[in-house]
Image (cartoon, rainbow, N blue to C red):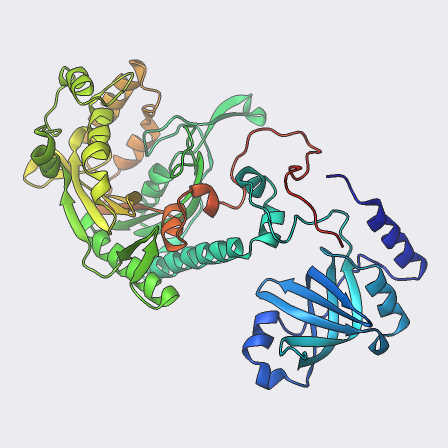
Amino acid sequence: MAIDNAKIESIEALRRAGIEPYPYSYHVTNHAKEIRDNFSEFEGKEVSIAGRAMQLRQMGGITFIDVQDRTGKIQGLIRNNDLDQKSLLVLTNSSIGDNLGIRGIVMKSKRGEISVSARELTMLSKTLRTLPNKWQGLTDTEARYRFRHVDLMMNREVLKTFEVRSKFMRHVRDALDSRGAIEVETPILQDLYGGASAKPFTTTYHTLDDKQMFLRISDELYLKRLIIGGAERVYEVSKDFRNEDADTTHNPEFTQVEYYEAYSDYETFMKMMEEMLSAFATNTFGSTKVEYQGETIDFAPPFARMYWVDELKKMSGIDVSSISDEDVKRINDAEGLGLKHPDRYHVADSLFDKYLKGKTLQPTFVLDFPTYMCPLTKTKRGNPLLAERFELYVGRMEVANSYSELTDPLYQRKMFEEQERARKKGDEEAPPFDEDFLNAIEYGMPPTAGIGISIDRPTMVFTNQTSIKEVILFPPMKSTPPNESLPPKESALDS
């Protein structure tokens, strides 16, 4: 949709009268929700509000403007006789979508609506484009993501989603700070990628002789260096990048918190996650119970525990802890997994998805993975075929992944060698051999528990969303012409 020439004419008219339509600042005394919730305190008092004009209605010499700020809407009631000439000129040249400032007295209209009776009207930013139709709003999913600024204007629930996300991020930080952890930063551009199984994004570092670099897939190996150095408790709120397909629960760029705590094991973090999530639900929603897609999820501890190798064997007859490389093609075909290049890791993972993932609506610790799936994890005490690892599932999505971290440098070297053999066989997700990390762990790493906590997926549960794109402000989109505006089917409002 092209720029509206009538709006440009309004800008010129304001400037001819000495009124700047894009001023430097405006003094806001109160917000819409504050005034509405405390009307008895504000009635008859002068306030200054500011926000976007979402509706504009004229009745004789009175104009009603619904002003929307970050807390909600409030009505501006403007009587021509109450305004000076400059304010009248601003009113004449105002339209839906403009950012306006209103100074006036808090009162109720004849219909009983809480309003601000204007004494002064200020243009704060003149819009050049017309907002989508007020009845249809902005509903096209791709347009909502691509034009997130318009989405936020038209769909106020979207802003609430990101307020919950912000609160959850702060809550995780507070919980880890309370344990005496320090927040750190590690490289996003790395010489080698590691700490997970994923295909990396690559880039070139020109000032280092055009050296190939990788966007990190995990912070793990750098944070462990800090544990080795004696930091004891460290975490990072990180953007990680995995060059893989996107779906409703995966995005190639995602946010997680990785935390490492010396002298602890994965049992420590099961208790921590129960406390962290139940406290957030209670503090934010007043209950440990939240509604998710028509079902109730209860975050009250203790969370369920699923020993998934045993549970899978009961359901399928397959013991994934001991399957061999020779077994994988047969299982892939017999179970209809559809893997093009099956290996033990992906066969086991697919069997979990097929038989057990659907049982994880309620918070569930999925415990003790096959050792071959966990190259950075200590083996299970009493059973070397298993590893001391849990994944926490909520709403049938993995929201956290934790290990009793492998600290034996000789065994770690052996596991890296296995990964390297897989990589040379064509496994694009197997990370390269990392001699620098082995050098670090050879100095001695204390017993340590590690965990990665998703920010995106718990936010999906807490805000009742089914797509990860709904909790990412600017998700990646396919290319679009630079001058593309809102799709034509999003009709416009007359001002």
